[in-house]
Image (cartoon, chains in turn green, red):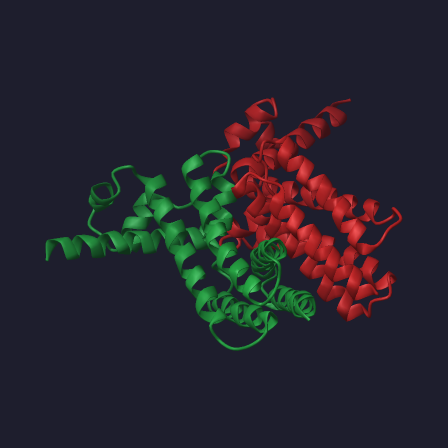
Length: 194
Length: 194
């Protein structure tokens, strides 16, 4: 029972860290705010994360990585062309962005940009997150008949396009840049496959 | 003489703010660090930027916007296909990233992600920065024969792809993701034009 409660508190802290990073980045997220946001007892943070903010940030990046990886791999199981897959993934992201009133962004991008020069541990977590999205996309495109090297190039470009479009959409408070990415990627992938 | 010196100090403060944002983001950049980095007299910050950090951040975003806009518009004057233009722009960005040992990122992306939910002024500066890159790229692609709406869609996708690829390249400490974006965009634009 105690273990379960502890695991719940730990998960709530990671979830809160993730949400706060999405809204305001890593540096702007204070640990007191995380504890309040998670409605966790004071002291629970250093109990669960004795290594502090960096370890909590790493877990938040890993959680975000796993969620987006699942979105991509589950969407890839549905029938359709690579362009259809991209459109569906981008529809989900556009919905999340609009539902949050453009207040949430990709946590992996912002942690890379803020902490890439200061924390090898966080930079490494972000590199792994990007790899965890590029790899299943590569496998998917290879299964669609692309040579592996081409599939990897296209998959890397797809992940980059989606990341960049999320940022422009947030700045412009419009899903239009995400729609432009979906259109361009569908053109690229469905023609490339034909 | 006094005016000139004041303008120089002001420009140095903006330049330092820009470099620090590129390395560690907006929230992680303290104003004392900016003054030290700029070797500016204490007090000069509030003399030149009485509205404080937000106004200085806005000027830094504007400076970054203007530099990248010039890179795009000047490169567009060189002969070649749209794919050649993208490759040249990405070559310059890849060189900057590698020369900085992957310590510098796009300041507009990071300010969007950190401050988009907190400062309308900074979000607006970022939206204008993205627009200032998308607009000349749209005009360039329209001049290559694309209908205006298609040119705008492709230009938005190009800017997003480059932004996203910069982030993945920084996380992975490799110019490979930028090369993948160049390859995919050249495929898209040069085929689209043919």
